[in-house]
Image (cartoon, rainbow, N blue to C red; front, side):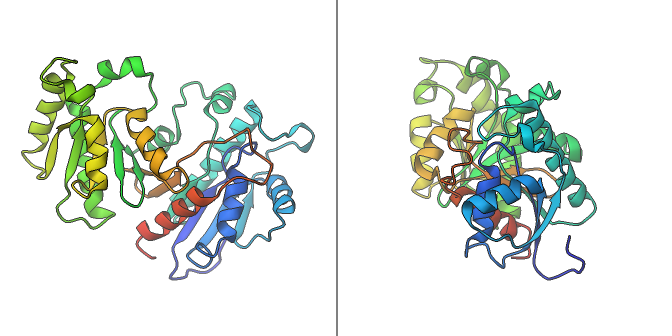
Length: 321
């Protein structure tokens, strides 16, 4: 760990699931000219995995590294869901949080994890990075925002089954998503008067109840309430229109009702460069917008672009870059 303070931001990176592409994209990103020199980096992982991937990629590691020593060489394999790997990824994350808590870093970048591996390791109620970090940091209100060059999207509901979405939507949840989005558009992105488009749930935003009543019963009342103290909120906008409107510059951000409503258009446009940003934590946290990609793990062919963008955004939002 760095022994002296510098003017650069300090960024801690958790290596993610050791069996996935997290270690690879982390090392590739740190070797990128786009990243070099932006911050003082601390990577948390396992030295065995690091050395194995460095040899594969023929790269040199520059930065500080904290090895947890929690991977057994004889049982390790790329591209596998396994409780040991899930437990290791949580231990990396916990250590990174300890560093943040001790004021050893300004921001956190998380490489992809595998939820099945983590649940199998004993974390039965694990939902994802966002919820875990919120609980660990005692944050009461958090949101998942996806950020790219011309599109920002905040989710109202996150990792739940599609059939459960209508029942989980509430006025309070939508108002909360609008409020936190407005706050962080101002705080992180310096947008003085944010314009926020709120997507409907149903085709054509329900078309006056013809295709569902969630818009008139839940979404519209939420927008009306939020608009009393937040200006520039529009909706509900038809889901097949709102993202294009944002790309055209009509909205600074979109509020999406559920995961795939947001992630399908976002990843079609920004699969390799999109970033997942958590709003509401007491520190900056970003991650690439992809998963562990077990099918290509260990092959040296993973694209680090999203990880590069996640690190760049963490440096910029930390207020020192």
